[in-house]
Image (cartoon, rainbow, N blue to C red; front, side, top):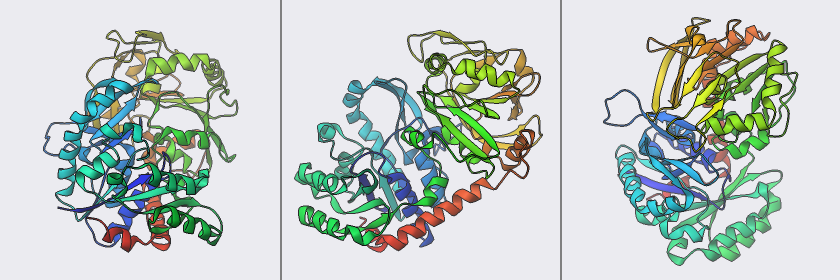
Length: 491
């Protein structure tokens, strides 16, 4: 069985995902068979992964972070790399995905009572991930300092103590208070949990690291823990897919470039990394537009992304007056792309007769495509290879959606997936809808699409850029962390 080490954070968004990906790539470069694992994740940015032993068509859902970490390891993603995925649908409730499949829905309080049952699935997946590996690098969720949730924890120390995995604590110096956050974690953890921590590292440091020498001495005095290093701000991380929607606040604006792409920040936005290949194009500026802010009038393209709650986000779309902005954009001759939930919003009506998404069972759409959508209980989850209809070029991506869409504009599909027409297109070709995530990841398609928008020379090799960014992150970690010591402490 593989040895293992776990990274837990003093809080959320301290950079664990990128650190795990970088360590996975560093271990791979050393010739190790390495795998990622995250017992429990919460994200609406999901990926489709294989379900080992399931020969049926389709796949299962995992967090996008574990998909990226699998790439860093050079292996295909598996649902066992992230056995429990929570997909928030409301402020107090989420859909629960277990080993890739929908388990049910629960409010936050009810979910706590389910954790005992879910730990069995976590440990089952843990055993499977370890079967064919030399090393497993585990990512925690949130913070072990959330001692009010400790008794039913499956994501941090609850898992680490059950699986006997040593822990490296990650502190984020960029947000301030890092000495207090590391020392405070040491102070409030019960002794059983404190013993699991073999040391710590500091992440996101800017400037002269020697200025923090006294800080390191202070942490050692309070905790007795060893420091594995201080990681600088990793510029290459910006070229990697983002998982959590908290980063959208930092993506609200970009540098002015030849083409502006506006993306409304939906309340339940999902799979917004669909925009990453466009962001990587040198001549393209992607602007995530926060609620309360108009869609920019100088945008050449508006992309309505996926949503975990199509009807709820459609109602909020109107509350923000984005519907009027979008109609004005259309009258100016602007282009519009709707992906998954965004595609459904572009029609005349979205109906949810079974109340799958909530108590509101129908909502008038934006009326820019002559289609209607009816939500249905069966969920489509699969990786796909397809062809673009307008350009006759290959596409590759995945589907994760509820609902069936029909109407006259589907006679002009945007893609052919496994011989079946997908999506819809307006008569003038300027409004496009599709259920396929990853549309812009196809370099050839992206280059041709950008040509229509007046951008020449697009279509960079996006996937190669991700691979280079992973290599750069791994190199930075090798330079600033004692990776030998971290890997040696795995057990």
